[in-house]
Image 1 (cartoon, each protein chain N blue to C red):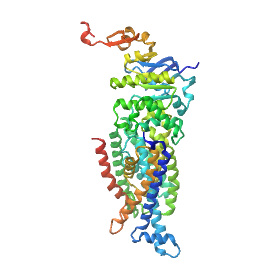
Image 2: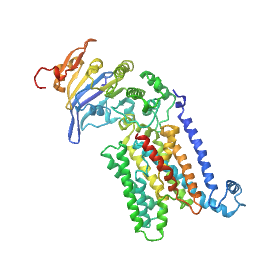
Image 3: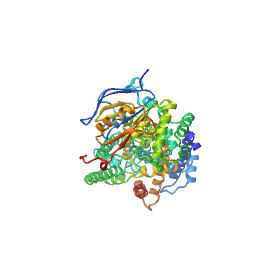
Image 4: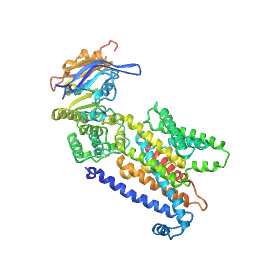
Length: 336
Length: 268
């Protein structure tokens, strides 16, 4: 029998430590590269002697890039975690907030919020949360009759709900005549460039408690993978666990969507990647997804900024370009 | 002396269908209690009531002298372990991981195991006789091996009452007898009360200290194998031709199914 089984805490510290380093490296790289073409050394100079260095570069670093990379890290972590939670709760390795249409639902909520002229926080976040919950209930309702466990029923209802949400979004967009149109469209594709430090801090204060609550349920999620009956017979209060996890996750996803639009497939790519390395234990997967997902998102955003000669791509385009083929691959592998 | 399990006038209805009706019986501590009965007679529902997975529509279920409702989930899980009929498992936990999960009723919210938990998981695996499988992925095991892993998980939970819903269904002969012997060992060595739903009346006859024949949601017959497994009782409940004689290995009944071609003329 494996000796490593005896020290879950040691493994947890190791995984968290390694990924923390990866995340910090990703953040530094993200900070150091941008359209104004500065390098790691310039970043180092900026950090080490803050007074005497180039003030324009400093402004770019602190006012533009820092909020942006931090936002990317937060959103990446939250969306990966969202994917992981949905996969465990629905016992479906292909579940993900974007694929299930929950992100789409919360986008409708957010657009309605924008059109009604609400403020970003709490107005738009709340409309977005309301809409995402409604979508979640709708999807579970559609697939419940034919047992949630059946992969295809769940995914198909997700696809349909997603299509419907897209149509509603397009409808709302086409009704919008003013200058916000470009912003809405860009935001929809998953855009991290709108972040400022204050919004990022509010989002962090909001997301970090969500991370903690979900981590409290890590072992419960392991037990829930064994099926409802067995989990319950091992002392899990299924109804409460489901309720808390679905609510917190939807809240987390809508906070991200209302901040930076539709960024898909992160919640698919990252949990799968880590399951490959770490196995199915959620006590390790949860921190790994938060940190690793954060790093992944920072790097995707970096690509989005670096690839085009002029301007930039929305980060959601990059994550979809990587994620969608992976989804197809996983789908083929799971249904031979 | 407090009883193991006691049901008093238990009714259970689901969507206006009466599944169980007026059930009253007792299961003594350290009994090997087997519930048999035709399909749809309510065996699985009865099992779920005893583990607290369902609440009776009326009546009382008492576990170890206390109403089952008075336990919280974790406390109940320290007393009762359950092996359901089928367990979906799409995620590749190892056998050891799964067995270790049996310790979670004793752990805090975060479910971090300590040395004792790991030791108990090892013991449960050894007791079940699957030490060689410990590092294998549960998703790669055969049906019989997988069932043994889930049973080891339940043993690791150190329950006073172990409930199993058709644990030997669709297993090969060697695994069937292995599981039944294992349950007998658990009952005699650790004084665990075993409650099992089974379709195999012959296995039930050879192992049960008491049998319950459930029919249409009611207790048809309850007692020792000799008392319950008579031709009249079985024919009345199952409604098919049977031959009941004595098992050559001992003083328990043996039930043989009679194919239609051996039944003289009369319409079946």
